[in-house]
Image (cartoon, rainbow, N blue to C red; front, side):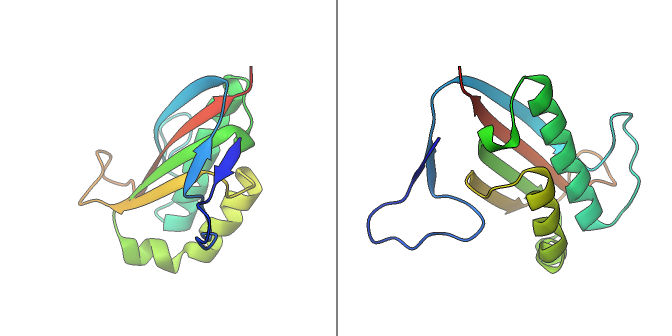
Length: 130
């Protein structure tokens, strides 16, 4: 994986502007903060984000990949203020489960998610080396 940073641009904090990679592509559907049985264990934003990240990592592992193979993530959040307030705990969960911040990332506030209790949904794209 190669992080792309145009000359003179400052390095972004928490993501990359672009990523180039070669290998087997894996597209991970939006993961929310429930466990493998579809059960929410918390309504806390950071804990739901942690579970969603773990769900992403579990799908990636099943495909033979590792968290460092993630090249893109999109976060859909129902409340940007709640997301920002939980940033420290989310960052800690991200470092523990995913590791590096090299993926190109986008975060978008949405009116609602399909599951009523869901506060965050994370989809990812990974490129697993051949």
